[in-house]
Image (cartoon, rainbow, N blue to C red; front, side, top):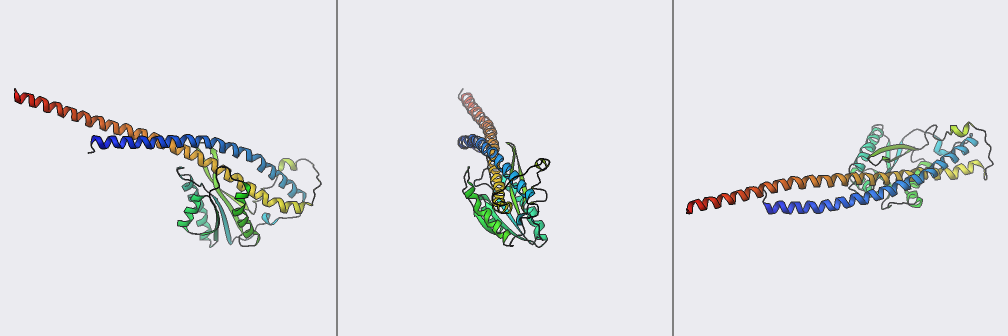
Length: 290
């Protein structure tokens, strides 16, 4: 059994760790609020881009952009969005489990797989897991820019345009609320059937003059549209990371408190036993003298 000195040292060490986890919890809570604000601010842009592309596609219904045309699937690409830092509970692990299910399904069909990774945790995972990683981005921070994220996305889109990939998926953690983050796997290219249908606008008559022509606009805006989807997914993943870290650090802080209580109880029992033993020795000694 541990001595009183050893227990005191353990309690002191756990209290120090508890201070760190409590501080990390408060920092994560603050960052989560800012990440939520950025995520919500990015949604109107993504929605507006969706409406513009929908209008253009309806106006030029006889033209099919390559990103809208399905073809036989022989090679598949995954854009995987993970966090740069750990201590976020099972956030990344759950994402990888969801990803590996889809990867296995395609591998069973003899489909080649390629990855573009965003986040240091994803890079570390694929170093152990293996697989072809065409591009990787790390240290994108809490407020990434379009320019930062465009590189891995453009690599995948170039491979698709040149026929080296037949389908691209986006894998990220969808922010539901502070307590819930949901791994999401979305088909990015070709755009799923009905993705650009805009029933609300189609129900009304409208007529626009496009300059330059609609085909040129669709070609130039389609890449921007795909980038906006990935950018919004990264913002969602950042908010998910901070909320998961806040929950994980709160659990660690609570567990440290429970462990301190248990050690304190053991310490008090040992101390009481030591005092009782000393009293017994004194009484026994006094009895022997008398």
